[in-house]
Image (cartoon, helix red, strand yellow):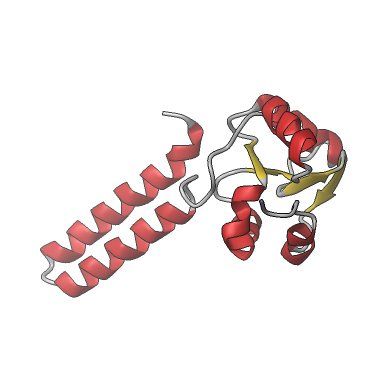
Amino acid sequence: MTRVWIIPVVLVLSGSFLAASQGAEGAVGASVALLAVFVLLAGVYSPLPFPPSTDTAEARRRSAADGGPIVFWRPGCTYCLRLRLRLGRSARRVHWVDIWRDPAGAAVVREANGGDETVPTVVVAGRPYVNPDPRWVRGQLPPSS
C-alpha cells in the first residue's frame, strides 16, 4: 500500500471500531453517523477527489503543448482540495502531479519553496506560484476546445 492510502484506511478502520463500540452499546443512530463522518473524512484525505495524476515530465510536456498550468499537490492537503473544488469541471484542464507519487515533482516543489514541500504549488509558463487564489488559476487555463 502506498502512503497516500494510509490516512484514509486508518480513518475507516478507526471509524469502524468506534461505530462498532457505539453499536454494541445500543446507540445505532450514533454508530451510523460516526461511521459516515469517518468515511467522508477518508474520502477527503484520499486522492479520489482529484483528476488522475501524471508525473512531472509528462505534465511539462502536456503543459508545453496546451499551455495549461501544472498543479503540484498531495492527498490530505486542505488547500489542494480547496483549489480542486473551486476549479470545478475546469480542474480537468490542469495537469495534476501528486508529489507523494512523483519524487521529481516533490523536488520541483522543494526548489520553488526553499526546501519545503508547500502545496499546492502551481507552475504557469515555468514560474511557480505557491497556494494561488483559485480564481487566478482559473484565469490561467487555456481556452476549452
